[in-house]
Amino acid sequence: MTADLATMTGIDAPTGLLIGGEWSTGKSGVLPVLNPATEDVLAEVADASPQDALEAVGAAAAALPAWSATAPRQRAECLRRAYELMTGRAEQLARLMVLENGKALRDARGEILYAAEFFRWYAEEAVRIDGHLSTAPSGANRIMVLRQPVGVSYMITPWNFPAAMATRKIGPALAAGCTVVLKPAKETPLSALAVAAILAEAGVPDGVVNVVPTNKPGPMTEAVLADPRVRKLSFTGSTEVGRMLLKQAADYVTNCSMELGGNAPFLVFDDADVDAAVDGAVLAKMRNGGEACTAANRFYVHEKVADEFSAKLSARLAGLKVGPGLEEGVDLGPLVNADTRAKVSDLVDSATGDGAKVLTGGHAPDRAGYFYQPTVLDGVPPAAGILSEEIFGPVAPIVRFSDPQEAIALANDTEYGLVSYLYCGDLARALRTAEALEAGMVGINRGVVSDPAAPFGGVKQSGLGREGAHEGLLEYTETKYLAVDW
Ligand code: NAD
Image (cartoon, rainbow, N blue to C red):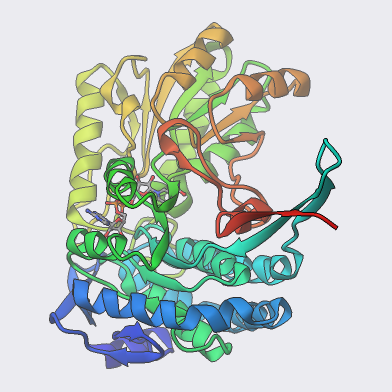
């Protein structure tokens, strides 16, 4: 199976556990990885046990003193080499990602470059970790503040961005001088293992990055969090699992960063450039086939422009080519698995039951693979159930509004607060609205917000902390204050 994988991707993708610089088969059998476009087994990856994960923690703890004492420039150069290796192999890595995740090759190529950028950005940040010095107000002493690495960091990543969610955590951790145990999602371990192999090739010492895919994340995580050598949990995934992990981490007061679910509103005001809004909507909705925490999930469109917006958006989505992600020209691959497709299909049925009208799509095509047609639903009532769920698929529900204040209130009427999108002609009005939107990020006349140099993260139940930018580095540091008299 892996021979086929090598032929299909052009790289020899590792399938073992990586612990202390050694690739091994682990102690609890194998984990099958499916190709969502065919529903066939693509590869078998070693399935780590809690004991394997504790060995990985041991390796990370043993590597920590030397890595945290390594010159920042040297840590930076490892990350920079990893960036170059990743971009040099972007095509092969993108193909590997398509095979395990399903996304269209164009999306996978975009993700590999985005993922590699975190290594480049944090190579630059590694040499800019500063502290500060001031005089106590009483004048009695100096206040000296240092930033030190938080220590062994346990990372849990989702399947939807299997490379970028790993590099967005590993990049800042390594820059700060931390060591890592990464548990990728069981659906997409191959991309994470390939990233780890690149880091090793780039000169990252043994034990600094360990990877333990598993079929049973619960018992592994309980064991890892209970180990006092683990000082940091960085999780990206659903709010439901994040909430549970925060409760577990509370027992050990583990430092936590949480990137959780979203329910992004996309507002189109009456003075918006409708063509630009449609372009932005296609990006915000269809990037990664809608399987993104940042995916526009609810479209609130002013009634004056709603007919034009919905007609143009459905024409664009109806024109997308659906098929296996590796086929050139395909815009939309399959969803990741059968459960995800069933959820999308149930949400569309519930919306039509609530009175929504299907403008395009609304069903799964009759073929193997977890495909779902790009779908636009118009006239969705503001109280429809689909608007309070993360759809995670290629479905755009449109709600029409007449009062912008009411649209802002509807946009904020959710426990989530990751990102909001706004199309508006008057920039002052757009900025005022952006201030009123309860979200960690706002795209103004833009359908994509992600950027390694920008602080990514949510408010409310979308998370705690930020990834990317200088803020992302600080998540892997502890502040130490020295009271100094001289
Ligand atoms: P998920 O929460 O089911 O899984 C995420 C990760 O958690 C996986 O690695 C999974 O194996 C692990 N996990 C599941 N149960 C666990 C447990 N009991 N203990 C420890 N780990 C456990 O989410 P998913 O379906 O894989 O990913 C989609 C979700 O991720 C969506 O809600 C999406 O919005 C969110 N997401 C958020 C961001 C962000 O930056 N805010 C980015 C990407 C995805």
